[in-house]
Figure 1 (cartoon, rainbow over the protein chains, first blue to last red):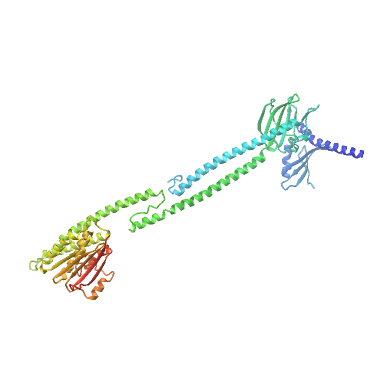
Figure 2: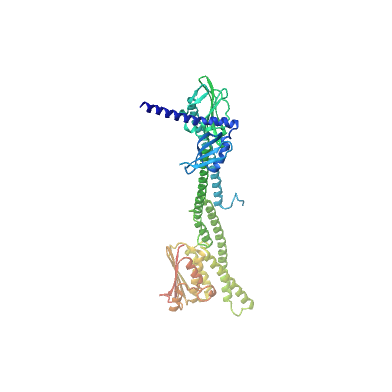
Length: 100
Length: 446
């Protein structure tokens, strides 16, 4: 019983943390684009839009093996959600898939 | 005529209507566009103002600086480039933006506490932002808050609406012009009877135009009628003058003709015969002119035939002409006979009938005049009369002696014309009392 309660608290804390970290990501992106470590989002978007027009649903900045990646979710006109992975420094599209 | 001032009334009305409507629609469109723009902007601005206040409430001060409690602001401020943004700047220049701004730089001016304003600026990806900026003080800290919204989606909606409105206005214009064309043509169709009337006026069937026309045409029709009246009076006057002249000449001509006819053959010389021929020709010309004048219209109405005065004169002339025959010419007339018809017409009719009777009579001629509404003339003589088949032929409708046989036969062409003119009738038969020809004429009052 107690363990269960603890679990719930843990999960909710985790959720809050991830939510917070997702929210805070943009501030890091701001710092990085100001320092020139990544390109500004506005310069990256045209390449994605060219590959797939749509509205941005969600955006995350990740760091993998020393590279900054943007994970972008796009909603197209037909209502399908696309997921892109793009190199935040070069703008190269690394992955493109229709989300299940 | 230039394109702008065309000769066609319909096209002129079209131009007028088109011009007015385009002007009206244009003003309406401009007014509508401005109204919608300011209305939507006001609406969005007031929403931004509320969001700014909610944002102010969501701000908490931490050790590291200010934080905005995410649960207290709308989700739309979290999605990157969503079109809804905010920015909070402290007095020292430290800024916090909404997540939606991501790494975009919003250039927001510093505001003093209590100051506020509206700005238009470009956002990320060329978004057109309406920014509400305001200065606040919270827990002793001076803050500049900016809340922005992308106007593009609403602008697109607005442009679509304005385009549709313009299309609709254009369609309305076309429909109105078509309708107006129909109305105008309908109106002009009402003038068609007038045209027909004028046509039949030329044909002589009508004396004046009907004034049952649209009000706009009424003055024109009245003028035409006035002109027609003037013309017909003038025409009448000249016709009367011509008729009167011919009448006036007729008496002397008759006397001259008789003079030459009755001249003893011993005295006859070649020039007398020539003169006689010329006089006869002139007499025939006058005869023809008189007939034409009479046929052309109602003729001179200046003088009426007065049986009390005119008949006696006529009889005197006849007695003079036929004085050698010693005829007894008897006139029987009702004492209350009122003047009737045109003097010259009746004199001519009576003169012809009596002259004829005198020519064929042995000794007696009788002329009887009666009538009230109608005027009845009976002329009888005691001559040979006509054979039954001749009577039948002459009584037959349409059988008339025409101008060519004038002076020969019975010389009844003029008589017949006058009878026709007065819508009367003419009957030949044998007189029961005098045993000669009896001619009965009934004339109607005109």
